[in-house]
Image 1: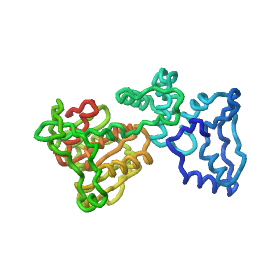
Image 2: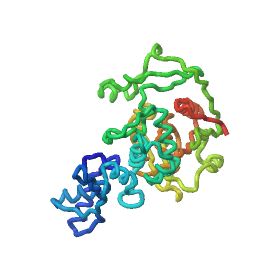
Image 3: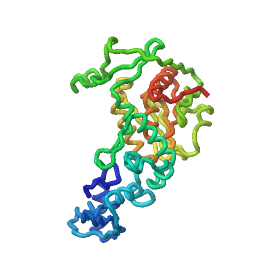
Image 4: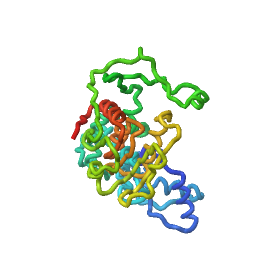
Length: 348
């Protein structure tokens, strides 16, 4: 179990506990999948890590297994497609981990995007976008080290540089030391630290201004509407089914009375701290919500935009995003933040 064949981003204790309780009640689970490596004289577990942990939790020494002949690499290749159609639903992070394993391998990375998508049980577009993302970020290929091969979906957002706008000019800001004040000081002031102007370096990026009523397309999949979300102009943009609705009301009277019928999941987030909220914490909340409620390529709708970098987060998590933000300056800030991806943004 420790040979790097575990296909998921992480194992879940609550799932192990649930399976263990089912076993105590007499439930029978499908056999786990193992590969017998004749040369190494070891069985590599390729599918069924939660089931094995559940058996261990109740003190069982044996587990039913389906045995294949093959090496660790063959076990890994099997594991990346495990649970695509059965078992515990894979999160976005699970899918990224599966695709990254093949893209980081000297042999498998030479396969076509369609072959990798078939092996991993994901969309061809996800593989294509992740391959480009890894190429742009300079990710190296490695064959043997399966334990340190995860790329954070927030790789771009976690960069120590940010873009900011002053007087129509876009600047690059080093944020390495932002937020390093004491917890007591932050609790008292409820505001984020700011760098001094002598640390700001101009970039050759032309700022794009957004006006009320405009629709902008960011990259290939994201839309930003500057106006009221109830506008027919915005409603016409929306897909027939919405995987996740994110609402950030600025006043309590704007809270919806009920969830729309075409929305599968929803998160409403309001804070009395307003502009002084730590956006890093908010970003983590949104990332966790996306990972647990959506699959890759499922559409997300945002009502009001508290963080201009949310479009970058959606891009890195492979979720098409439709956002309505009434404030033209916030929309302009979103375009400024998006420019760091080097992808186009255009008014439509």
